[in-house]
Length: 323
Ligand code: SF4
Image (tube, rainbow, N blue to C red; front, side):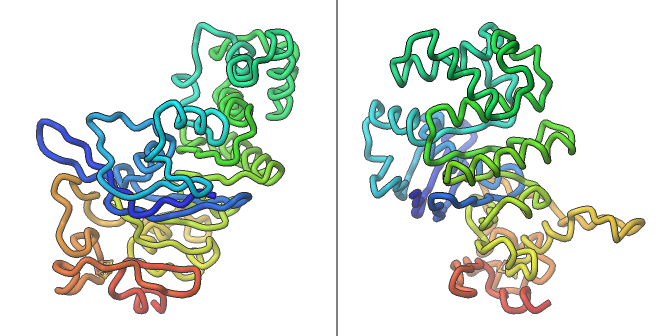
């Protein structure tokens, strides 16, 4: 359904050019969940914004690649056509529901507006649809609460309302950008379960952007790991957990807190993510990589085929997978 090929995005600032996305290729099919994982600044959100067509341009600039949605390159569409795709076929869920919802409109008005604008419904019918959606995302007493304002709901309930808004027009693709980061752990799990359940039920493609490997284990089919604006590993979720094929993925996995290793110091990948104005030559991860060799500082690793459905951008992926 979605096929991103060789996407490149730069940001032009007074200090220079930030190379935020450097040739990203990934895809998602109907009914599939792809988790895109990486630290802040790895390019995962910028890629998603480019797919949605909501990138700030300028300062952003798409300098290469294609974004094929059902075979059509979205980058070649006029803004009006693009807006139609965004309204009807794909939707985005953001991290911070409070700043994404309008504080002076009731949630019923905001949900209903989608049906008035995109489906030409009357206000009365749109309100009934809003209640239906709120029930679908399990907001208790939806009929009584449809006139309430965003600040009258808890963080978890607001995030459910964001999910309801995204689902309103039954898109075939949803991009969820850190949808549970602002919530506490129990609510996080409930919201993720709800999202996964609705995704299965509606057979949508879901791109789940996160920095948290713990969140994706139960819901994702595949993972794409990003570093310095590139995909460094992509594989079915179980393969990655069983034996990562890139030292960066391995580091991310080792830094998940584990109950069975109580008392042991938590692993942290040394160093900091690179400055995207000055990406290190060769493998961008080499200054932080525990197994880097001389060639890593000069030769950019291609995405090696590790198996039929796995790729790793590491010259020494065999060593990583075995060890
Ligand atoms: Fe580490 Fe070299 Fe592999 Fe990069 S290519 S991840 S530096 S071993």
